[in-house]
Amino acid sequence: MKNRNAVIAFILSISFTVFILPGSASAGSACHNILTNGFYSEYARIDARLRDRSLYAELCSSNFEQALTAIKRARRSADDGSLGLSYGLFTLDDGGTSTGANSGAGSSGLVLNEERFMQWKSGYCSKNSAVDSSQAAEFFMQKAAVGHPVAMKAVEEWSACMQKREGLSCWASPSYPLPRNEEFLLNVKWTKTGSSQSRVRPEVRHSFLTRGAVSKFEGTEPRRILPVGYKLNTETSQIGVTRPVDKAIFANLKINDEGAEHSCSVFIPSDSDFTLSAPFVNRLKFRYPG
Image 1 (spheres, helix red, strand yellow):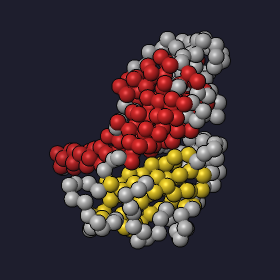
Image 2 (cartoon, rainbow, N blue to C red):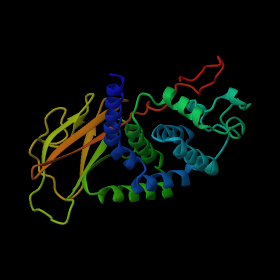
Image 3 (cartoon, rainbow, N blue to C red):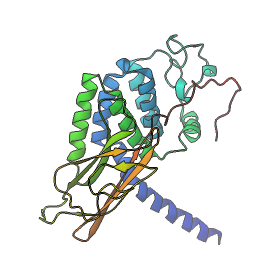
Image 4 (cartoon, one colour):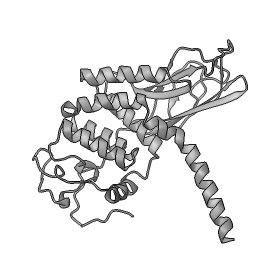
């Protein structure tokens, strides 16, 4: 029985790994890197609240090596000593003497090890999966890019990269001008894979919006993104979506292409996601979960 349970656990672990691979690959894709490159290039000039939220989400989507790279890039761009303090990655009791975000002390000289990072991640990233966190980081980085030419250029190049991906691609973009947290654009792009290019356009089989979000696409039923039977074309469809203020939502879409089903899912964070109500200070000697 013991051996049988071990075999079952092994099979389940393989199945789970296969399931999450596409999301993990997406998080580290060339498109994602284009956006993060623009974000770090303007990091020093971005409002601290916006960049902290973006980096927090990015770290939640990362493994330890990816997290170290992200932290090093942020420190090279701008390090006022407060990196990680606002979301608990480091604390004032870790050895720093900072009492303010711009004091020049705090987390600057601290080295993050894998055990500490995994403890932090289990305590501060448990609400969202790595894939959801990566999509949240992309959404926040787009908002953070506003007013920063290099980062905005990276957003344009990232969007162009997303539109070139084969198959069904879905991603969210903030509505401009900001702030308009209650509205965003859902981008949907279909690109036929393989050498044969059929003239048959894929049809929407099912779509769903959570938590009271409403599609502005004409003729769409409540809680749906696009009407059932709607035929996608080769252009990128931009669907305006409204949502209750400060509500994170999921958008799910399933299409049929000549008998084959394709689906995509997008997490759209709220402004209150990946933030703490106040900078984390370990005054009670709080021990991280794990």
